[in-house]
Length: 167
Image (cartoon, rainbow, N blue to C red; front, top):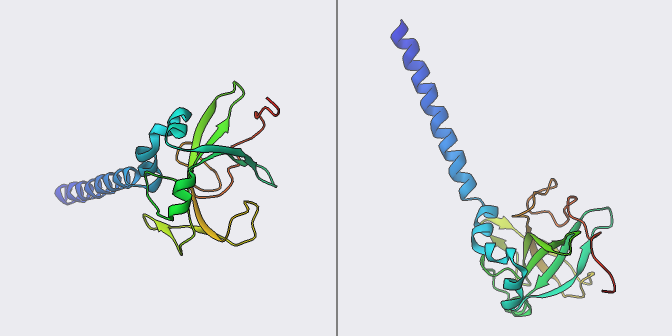
């Protein structure tokens, strides 16, 4: 009887071990992990500017939270390609010390419906606050946790408050 009980325990432990291994492998293969690996170079804002990204003002949400300062690559906006390592926008949160902290990237295309690694983009119709035609976009909060979701537009934990106006 003890042998059967031990066998059951070993089987349960094996199942738990396989499940934990699969869960950890899933984390490494998640879209936000892939985005961090492909775009970590942008933690230094100088890399973004060196690659042709230019800043646009910090975007705050009407009901709170923000997206941060978008550094946008106009060439990538025009080509409509979706490339994990070439986001159309790199997003930074302004910090109180004047530095910019990488928080997310944004993929944008006018061709859709669009997806990246199986994650569907959001559709924005025209007219919109960006002055663009209709487009599809996907935010990936790969460097700052977003309690409303990894792919949500606004992050309640991001603020534009540290922006210095008129400097």
